[in-house]
Image (cartoon, rainbow, N blue to C red; front, side):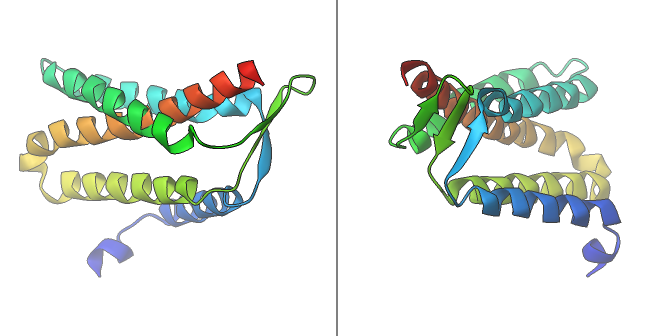
Length: 159
């Protein structure tokens, strides 16, 4: 119960916003081409900043992150390659089908980030043990968003 009471209020607000975003993705929606690239860019920048803070001689973190991106990109590509989309080049938008995968992915990212941050604070002496797993898993999540966006970008171009 201590974990819940010590969680900052803004984490609950962030969680609510992410759930709303994920629930909206369960219905067909039209997004601009720029929004398509936003999530992979945010995750990539967020991960690079995280790695920069922790790297200091631990270059294996970067290698684990790159391996995670490669695996995640394949997963992301696979999850959307069968999607039927509608492209509108005039408005620079793409219509996506509704899918629960975005909500599930958002909840997984939130849960994993929460797990690692909590354990970094609870067990600071063992933080190094978590860094490799964290960088690999973060790479997978980033890769999933990259893979999904890459496939949707290809559909947009062909559209």
